[in-house]
Length: 74
Figure 1 (cartoon, rainbow, N blue to C red):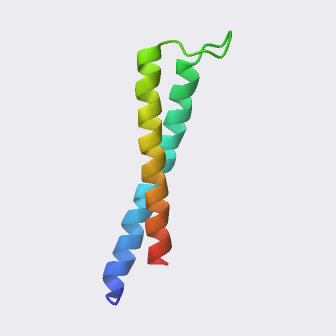
Figure 2: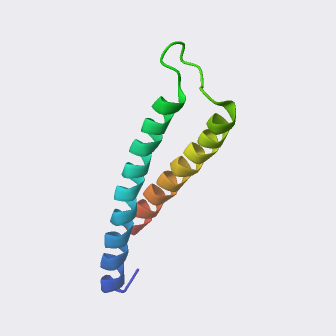
């Protein structure tokens, strides 16, 4: 990218997204613990667990794409 100001602003904004991604990943880990029974490691609610798996996949996907975008900017 030739426009240095735009490149700097892109890096600043993508770093903000990366920080949000880390917060989301931490929240996903907390949700996973809440959805899993302490007694036997089984899920507490199958319907919620299926949606959680879908959500976790999407959060992971966003995180991976963000990292790819960061690599392009470097």
